[in-house]
Image (cartoon, rainbow over all chains, first blue to last red; front, side):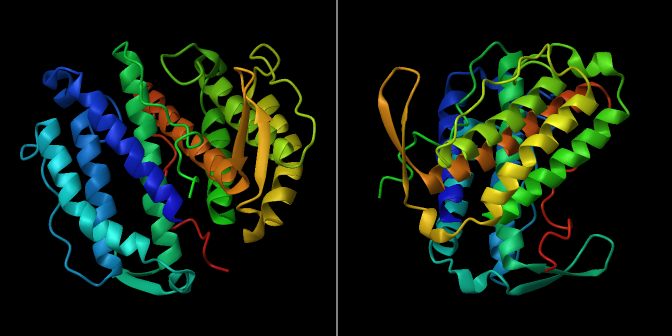
Length: 159
Length: 159
C-alpha cells in the first residue's frame, strides 16, 4: 500500500519540476477533460488525497481550494507540502488491521454510505495515477515530453 | 494487491463497452500521446500486463501484437480474455511471500536488472491506470463521457 503512495508522491514531485519549465499561462490554461487546467488537476489530486485521509481519521475536511486561490506552481507545491505532513503520517502508520474498518459517510445524495478503509486508500491511489495519465496527454499535445509513469527503476524497492 | 487488479479489469471491461458505442474509425484513429489510438492503448495495456506476469513465472514472452493485427473491439476483447486466464491465476494465487522475490532480466541496453516481484506487480497496476487516464482525455475531446475511474462504489470490497 505505502509503496504506491510513495510512487505517487515521487511522480507528483517530478511533475512540479516539469511545470517549472513551462510558461505559467500554459499551466492555468483551460483544457478538455480532467478538472480543467494542469495546475488545477494537481491541486485536485492533492486535495482529494488530503480530504480522504482526514475523513478516515474523523477529522474535519476543509473546503476544496478554488482555482483562483492557487495559481502558481510554487503555491501548488506549498499546498502539497502542507497537506503532506498529515497524509504521510497516516500512510506510514497504516497497518493491515485497518483494511476492514468501516467509514460511514453521507454522500452527495444524502444517503449513508459504508466504505472500507482499504477501499478508500486504494481509491486515493488510483485517483492520482488516473489524473497523472491525463496530464501526460496534455503534455504531448503541448509537444513536451511528460514525466515517466514507470514505477520500476525509481528505487522505491531498494530498502 | 488483488483488489487493484480487479479494479483494472472492471474498468477495462467498462471501456470495452464504451468502445462498442463509438464508430470504429474513431477507435483506430491516431491520437496525440499514449501509444497512438484508443484501441491500441487497450492492446498495449493487456500486452504489458500479460508479458510481466509471464516473465514473473519464467515463461517465454511472445512478441507484442502489432496494431495491424487487432483492429476491432471484439478482437481486443478476445485478446484480453486469452491473456486473462494466465494473469488471473497468477494474481489470485499471489501471496506476500513473493513480494521480495527477485526477477533478473536483461533490459533494452543489455544490462542485467534486478526487480522485486512486488515492484513489478505494482508497476503493472499503475501502468494500466495511467493509460486509462489518457483514454479519458481522448474521450472528452470526442465529446463523450469517459468511463468513471472511481474505485469506490464498484462493489469490489463487498466480500
